[in-house]
Length: 188
Length: 442
Image (cartoon, rainbow over all chains, first blue to last red; front, side, top):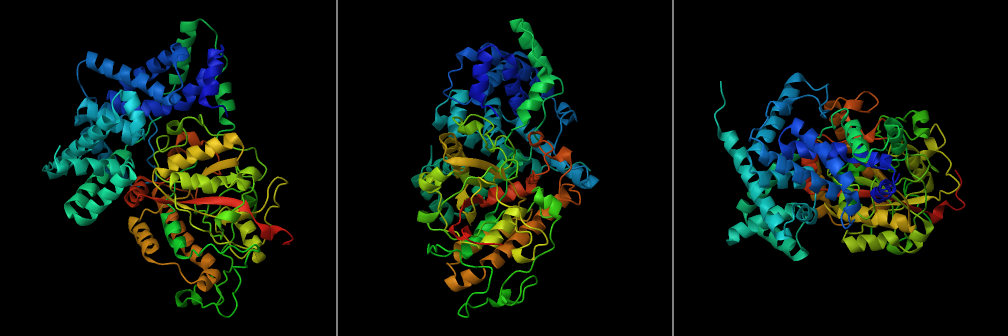
């Protein structure tokens, strides 16, 4: 299987199907990330498409000092942030419950277990959505994308030290939100 | 920033393995002496684990087509058939099947490690040692063993499945290596390991070897530990590539224990400790392929993000011709975190056992660990809806894995949390050339 740079070379040589392979390779991962960054699946889909198209059009400017996905992610991230800032701030919590995507939940779990798991996931989603944008984005990069600090620094154009402190503050804030939610009385 | 804020920030970075050795040591000292900091550490780990429980999604249907159409419109060029391209691209994909904490295995096996007294001829470890070797009382009459400590074969998997290296009922079991090796003699052999047949075409890394973050890393699939098969070429063996890689990445090299050839071949045939006691196998393990030299098993214990560095190293070395194949394998971690904690503590606390016991019982010990892992795996399978064959329903598997039956299922979120808590020790299963193979007949 060809590596990313080979596919990029082919694409730049005129073979756009090679780029199609890159799309296949990374679309799910990028989409997942953008769901959390953008806050909704609809928005994430738009960002996904825009990001790949933009990456294709700018491919000759990719300098290969980082992984292709890092570069792609940065494009997507910038698009998501700029789109989000242009539109009214609303978090589509209900949309996050759409079943359009495949989620790794077994259909053989007991219904109560599934519900409990879904509830837990939903709690985390909502807590994540309550974070400030910077914190949500950096946690997405770190925890969901598994990016190291250097990669995050590159994507967000931040010093590594800032990445480190921001991740900590984001985790601490999320921790506080989750603790607070556990303290809230439940509706009867 | 106050001192308290600073240490807390360091604890956060400590979770990510982003500290220098000095900083890491400092944090560990602070954690050891301050229970509040330990609580904080645990809370941050909980936050991380919570986030990792978030699902991953597939891109919406049609997204790929829409993207390519937009590109075509932008460039006013026709596109080739989309589905054909995807099919071709999948054909040689390296399947990394998941992640395992073989913390349990590694921890337990660490107990039976012996000093690097490598012997050129493979000792018959599965057989009874001379009378000087004591039999550990707890092992003397274990089910499945005879009083000498030899294992009797367990229920054997379907030979057809085994012949094709499909996972049998133990398909999710850990590949546990117990083998002796000194660093100077850890020769590796070249074998094609992907998909799983000897002589199969070597796997290619899915992305650029220049991009560690985008290679085979935890970001692609939501797991945190792995089992890795690494097969070195003769040149890699000669240059002690793996030893040097481990040293560079500061992964402690645990000497392995040499197993006899028959056991080795049984392990190869089953990809796990299925039925030990190769002389009783009802089938003949597959003959090595012409380019397949025979192996000793060795293993190392690695922690956390050392994985990333090692995997990158391996892929780089593959490009350089030192590594024949890297297969990321997977076995189910335990959903019972207490089990792994227990085994890790055992590894930390127990000094090396006497060589006689090691010689007599390493396989037995591994069997015990394997059984525990298998039980944990089975229970985790049940939780995730595995069928009787141990394979998970397709819809549970990450889409990258496709429908390859040789792929073992991924860990559930709970197991991942357990792995995170342990800062996962991981077992690498390697293969090396066995001098003992030469002249050994089956």
